[in-house]
Image (cartoon, rainbow, N blue to C red; front, side, top):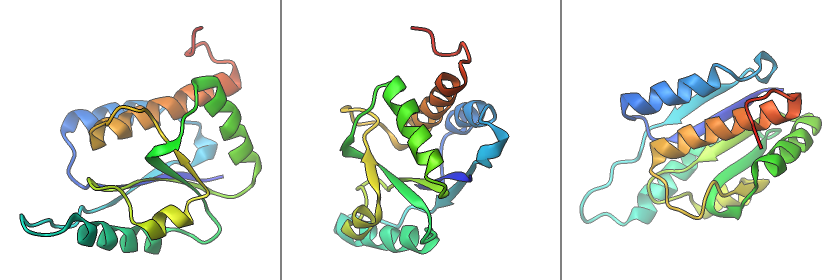
Length: 156
């Protein structure tokens, strides 16, 4: 199974790339994890954010494979505790389809991307900066994997 993160936002601070890499390097090889980045659409002072969001949405949809299971990271999505996420990931993995997580741009995602998603997952009720969401996402996937395999990373 392939797992990838499709994220809008091509310029992240170096600490984001470093922290994201720390966790993704720990992912199991069988995930064949990769990050695909979509540039943030230009926003002028007088532009409506909806135009940029729609443009980003078209790019997201163009990069999705029709057979992929899509998990949208969205503040309005379902929240999981760590054990619940590990269980949910087992279900996603046993589905047999490749898995694509999506993080939208600064204004969120278009309605068409929302409709394409199989599920929406909220990382937190807090608003997270885009880069921090990437790092938090990677850490939680690693934690879920450690729970699945009995690795002592998750201690409770």
